Image (cartoon, helix red, strand yellow):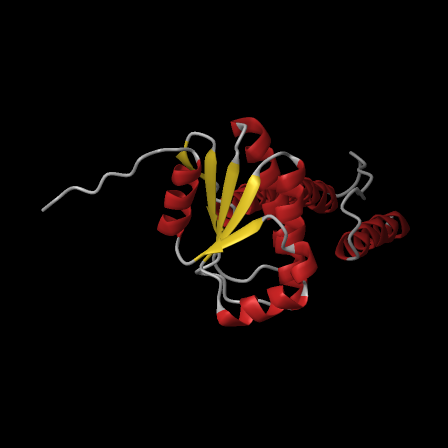
Length: 209
């Protein structure tokens, strides 16, 4: 009798040890015969393991749901940042403007190029104005990216104009002047728009005060 009791207790202890090690699928084999206290202990341990297993499953499901929502939010944020970093504006039918603000690294340069070329094709643009007034970095790689963008725009049959060129950027552009053919530079965005409209034969009338 005592031998059977010890065996059942050992099974209970073994299952608890396995559960403590992470095996929540372990269960205590129950026997209807014997002392009521040991039977209650066996059922109690099994019930506890069932609840812990369910709680873990619910927790994992919640973590997965949170992970999915987080990934979706990050994707939306990245898309929003992409759109905000490439705000191509239609200033006149066939005339687009892109104010570039902040630093232009390789990844952003690729995004800007893709966005600009897509807008040029969609809008059948004849001119694209790159306003560089707010650009904070003008490294050689940035300059080369801008020139490649200008050349790609020209291949699509449009003209590229630069405005707000800083002295530092101007020096970088001079170093690669061979790629500047067909790229006009004007002081401000307003000057560039006026230049394009004059090319199109649009008469600008200034109201008299």
